Image (cartoon, rainbow, N blue to C red; front, side, top):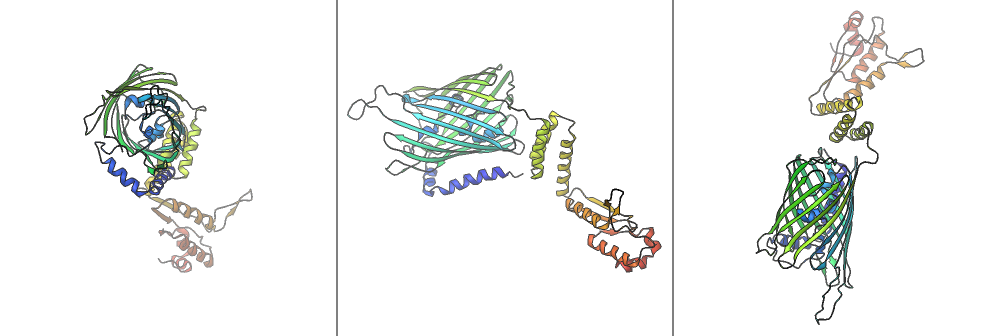
Length: 485
């Protein structure tokens, strides 16, 4: 099944990648291949590599299913069925701060649109000094504004997503601007398994007046195993356990490998614990991270922390979340109309998906049953598993429409030919047969010739001779109609 929206999505990403300088990606390739992170200091806007939520901080690279996914794991938003919002605050090393807001809006028959903003500031340095040991008040402001789009495919077993963000960096009196693309795919072959592949910060270069600077390219993978599947409709289980395993490579940093778990007890509390290590170097990172979350109906609060190094200690983040049910819940007829639009555009899988949603609400909705049956029939026809037998006969010389009391006419060879051609177009494999009695024994030979013209025009596979043709005379009829015995 092909999706027009998804085609636009990947075309946009491909065009964006091709437009950027090739030398930039040669450099990225070299640094990504340096798994130990020995080529540090070549990129800017490092705030783009920091987590954006408390859950993301405590789960490391565990693919989240909240509003933070619009920037971190955009493909996951394609599975959303409810509107989700988030406001988050992150306290990093040396009093650095990051603010984040996001919204994910799923739209039926379209996909999920997302919007987000993140702001990075130095906070307040109490003991900052310049090179001459004078008191310094450093100035720094970096922010990003972006939007995302994702769509689920193949019955929610695959989702593709992209987020595009405008970045502005203002260290002191300098200004740099860039565009960055985050993208990924999420694969859900089984209800309890999610595989997420992602690449972030693929974009243009920033120039502060000293030459172009690269964004910190960020690539990785995340696998989440759900011991008990957490339903997306918000009806939480009394207990569930998610286990996340991931890896991430940032251009200036060593390869990170991490594992985390989220335990939910009851319908309100969630505990998180994880560990992260760096490949190829003697790590200074302690690697432990954890957090706690609370949910009350459609509102949530999360607190996360992470030990970044022995020298500087831990960082922390706090997030508030909200999700909304549909303001106007869809009825069975609403789902049927969506399914009908997919049918008209030959999107069979999506049509069946929405028709089944309609039947969940109204099992007696005959229109939805009929739509699914039509798709099954069309698939059989296209694969050559269904043959149509089209049968006509017993016209008895009525070549023109017959008048009725209402003044309208019915029948006639012209109308019959139009119906047969329409049916033949719907069935690639068909057999067209006429059983005879197209004339009467008293039919003139000129009219028999018209019958022959009609047979040739419709292109029957087989023509029978009925009782009328036998009385008329088979040789006489075949000769007048130009048919072979």
